[in-house]
Structure formats: structure tokens, C-alpha cells
Amino acid sequence: MRKRSYLVFLCGSLVVLVIVAIVLRRHFRYPTERPAEIIYFATIGNRPFQDSISSIWPDGSRREEFLSPKHGKSYLAASGTSMSKRFVVAVHEVSANPKRTENHLFLYDPNSQVRKRLITQEGIEGYGAVSPDDSRVVVEFEPRTPAGEKREQGRLWMVDLASGSIEKLTSNDEEGTWDAQPAWRPDSEEVIFLRFRLTSEGVLSKLMRVSAKGDEPIALAEGVADACYAPDGRRLAIVAYGGLQVWDPAKDTRALIVSWSSFPDHKYLASGLSWSGTFDKIAFSITNMKTNQSELWTVSSNGQDAKQVLVENGRISFPVFVRTR
Amino acid sequence: MTIRNISRARIVLCLFLVIAFSASCAEGPPAFVKGIRILTLYDVVDHPPPVNIMLIGPPPNAVIVKGIQTFGTMGITFGAASPGSGGDFSFDNESDRFGISDNPDIRDNAEWSIHANYFFIVPGCGSVTRSFGIPPGGTQLYSVCYLGA
Image (cartoon, rainbow over all chains, first blue to last red; front, top):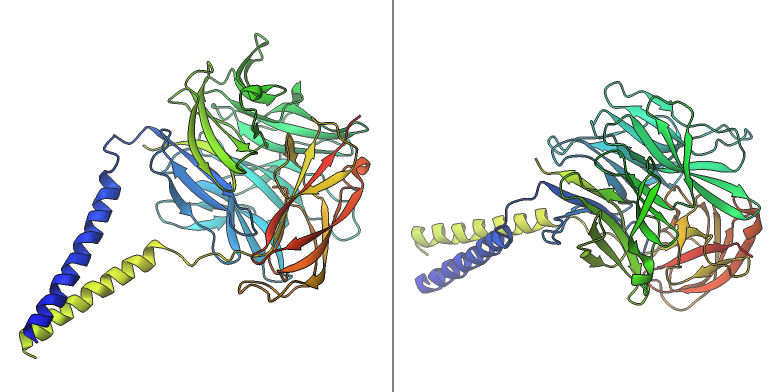
């Protein structure tokens, strides 16, 4: 009897030691110092409610899924500036009454783990981007109109995080236009976005900019599928005909830094760009048509050092560099 | 059994409970793999005929387009539904700002007639109906409008 209990004790201790070894290995597998910025990104799943938010180091290590899908709830996009600051998440969930799928933007506090709805007004919510100074969020929003009334066009709205107030940022009386894919200038004074316009030739896209105070938007360029500002607030990374480009509007110079012709098996599906303030790296995702997998890449602004950071099923979307300190 | 042995047995039991608790904390409840997800996209780069086409694989050069109506009705079944399957025989939905129309509660392992209507967003794309065999666990479909010369 005594021998048996010794054996049980020995086995139990062994199991504990194995688990401790696994935990220690996980923590010390990458002995390098934590980088100044890491990448948050969404993985849009291949089935309903399979969408998640993860983080990864720019060298491709330490991928961690921190918002995982559960029954009837998944996560389509995240935006923030720092791991220790509040960030905005687009939650895809089933509403109770009437039962239907809806997207709601939530403000998450990583310190207290508290989350709250960003917009209390009824409407269709889309992507939301946190300003670099963490004071505001620009969101794609379409207020719900009473039955029978003319439906609102999808525009950008500004949410003040201190007061919780929401105001319309962009407007346009032209039928068949809608605004999407907002991104902030690093000084938090300006937002760029895409305005889609319905024409007899189909939907055309135009890159626009608007003051965060809400003045009249100004057109920057046509035929753009994605855009974000450089950390200097002067240049832009854009996806336009041919591939990923760095554009300086003041000098009107464009440099093609990633040509899609160098990725013959890949296709770009508009899903967000991010330009690191620390590493001079631009993050983007592309889909490999042969493997049907999504790939996260980073590249320097001069087109050098292109690096495949991650390959996985689903569609990698909305990569964003966030500070770790 | 001595008191010493009972104490050791308790220690082992506690250790296993701690391990079991840690394991349960590490993984949340798994998500069901089920339903039909339709992604509605738009292509202005390629120039095939001006109709929307529903594909199984990802399309080239497409951007997300919202507000596309999607309908589905179930036809014949192929066998028993998967354990996670819903029981709906039809759906009526609209793609959201992420270009997603999710229909998680449909009955899978059956033939479905799927209809996508671009008419109110891009009239030139019109609408299209296609039949798909939806396997156990569901699937993802791409509805892509090509509009060009």
C-alpha cells in the first residue's frame, strides 16, 4: 500500500515537473528582449464566428491569440496604440431579439479587463481606428433609420473617448457614395479614408483626407485600395495599381516598393495597412491563391527586407503596430 | 492506510486538481464550426462579363462591398446533419461593413440554393442564384461582382 502511494506521488510530481518545464520553455524560448512595437491583427475565419484577434512580434515569433471566438461571438478587427492603453475591437455577435448577426464596437481596457460599447446609438457599425493620442476613435457608422425612411449612407463618425459623444465627421449629399477604411495621421489632427462612388463604370475609389475637426474632405488620389500615414505624417503607404507604394503628396513622388508581379500566386484583398513608428516597417497581408492561405508581411519603406511574418488559414486583416511600453 | 499515506494522496489529488484547473483556464470553450459565411466583394481590375459570380476560393483583386442581400433555401439533404448544425431551412441576410453575411444556424450536409443581389448597391451587377452542396460543418462562399468592358 505504501509502495503504491509512493508511486502515485512520484507520477504526480513528474506531471507537475513536465508542466513547469513546458511553461518555462514557452517563456524562455525566445531570449531576446521584447521589441518596442508588436503587431495586432485579426484573422477572419472561413466559417461563421471563427474570427479572432492575435498579437505577434515583428520577427514572426510569439504569436498569441488573445481574443478567441466562442459560441456566437467572434472578433473582426482591433485598433490601438499601446498594449497598456485601451483599444477598440469589432465584435461579431448574435443579437437576442430579433435574432440576427451584428457587429458592435467595444472599448477594451487591458488593465482592468473591462469592456464597454463604444456607440450606444442604434446603427450599423464597422471598423474603428483609435487616434494616436488615444483621445478619439474614428468609426464607420450608419445610423439606423425608421422603417420607410431613406436609409443613411455609411459615413465616418468621431467618438470622443473622454465624453463619449459621437459626431458625424464626413458627409456627402451625392447618391451612391460611402466612406470606409479610416486611418489617422500621427499628430491626430487628420484622418484619411476611402470614398467609394457608384458610377456607370462600376464602383470607383478615391483617397480622401479630412481634418479631425470635421472640415470639408479633400480628394488626394483615385484608384486606391488601402492607405496609411508614415510616422513622419508626410508620406503615405498606399495600395494602388501595381502594388504597395510610398507616396509623398507634397513632392508628388511615388515609389513602388512591393510589386504584385513579384507575387504571381498571391492576391491582395483590401484589409488594412500599418506603418511602424519605430522600425520603419510597413505591415500588410496577401492571400496565396495556390495554398488558399493568408500571409502577413512586413517591408521597409525603401522596399528592402521584405519578410514573411506569418502564414495561416483564414484571412489576416487589419494589422496594426502597437507599442509595448 | 496510514495518516501519512492519506496526506500524500491528498497532495497528489490537489496537484491534479490544480493541473486540471490550469488546463481549463488556458482554453476557452471551443467555437462551433458550422454555417454558411458569404463574403461579398467587388472587382474593378479584371474584366470578365458583368455578372456576379459565386466562387468557393478567394477571388483576385477584390475589395469589400457592404449591403449585398443574400438569401438561401435548402434543397435535398445528403445525410444526417453535423453535431453543431443548426436547423434553419432558409436565410435572408445582408452583408455587413466587413463584407460578411453569416448564417450560422442553417442545416448543413445539404444542397442549398444561394442568391446574392447586388442590384441596390451596384445595379450593373444584378443578381445571381447558384446551388451549392454545403458539407457537414458548413463552408465559406465568395460572391464577387465583376463589372467591366
